Length: 140
Image (tube, rainbow, N blue to C red; front, side):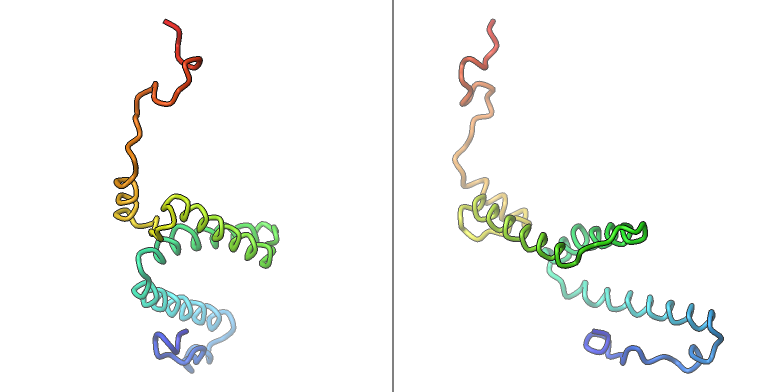
């Protein structure tokens, strides 16, 4: 990815870093990698559309942080099971999305499209008596 998006032949290291003693070289390599990751993230974020960015920040990134914290406390993560749950969640979201959008292929992460779906629906009364059986109404 570094070669494709940044034109860098990773993990090609500067000679100065590798000539250092162990702890210093390791620290500089980590800092160099962190800088590379930062640059790569900036380039990739610019290539994402709004939906992908939302999923990245509110789904993937938060999940990765939680999984990392779990592994730090010795709670193992079953990657295959996680992938299965993720696929299942995507299928359920698709089914719900189709149901909500009535099969019209709307993007439910786009506020304008959601507004269009709601605007086109039959109005529903917000009255407390609308559709409520009389036995549930308070007796005067």
